[in-house]
Amino acid sequence: MKKFFIILLILFLVSGIALAVFVVTFDADQYRPLLIKQVETVLGKPVRLDSISLTWRNGIALKLNRLAIYSDAAKQNEPPIQLETATAVVRFLPLLKRHLEIGSVRLDSP
Image 1 (cartoon, helix red, strand yellow):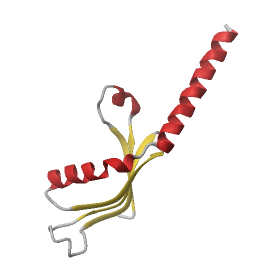
Image 2 (cartoon, one colour):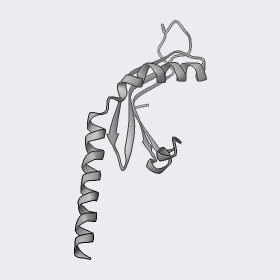
Image 3 (cartoon, rainbow, N blue to C red):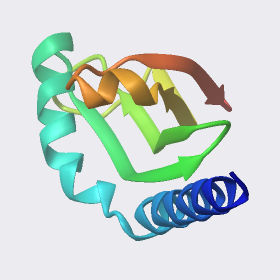
């Protein structure tokens, strides 16, 4: 029985380390053009997004840096919606079923 718990503990530690390495090394910014295009299509307004990254905030979180939504295509005026950062915590179990569910959202400097 003691061996079972040791093996279980080792598997838990290896899984945690693998998850930490994934979060640190994954380049979410490669999906920035796709995300901008999708948001612009849905909103019908131009969008600026400086970078995307994965972080840890009580779970795997997607962090959007310097997000701005403009009111016209010329982008000449000050954007009516502008955020320094937006962080969305993603629920893990629905991801295994290929569903994206957001557990919480945090907006900084709106």
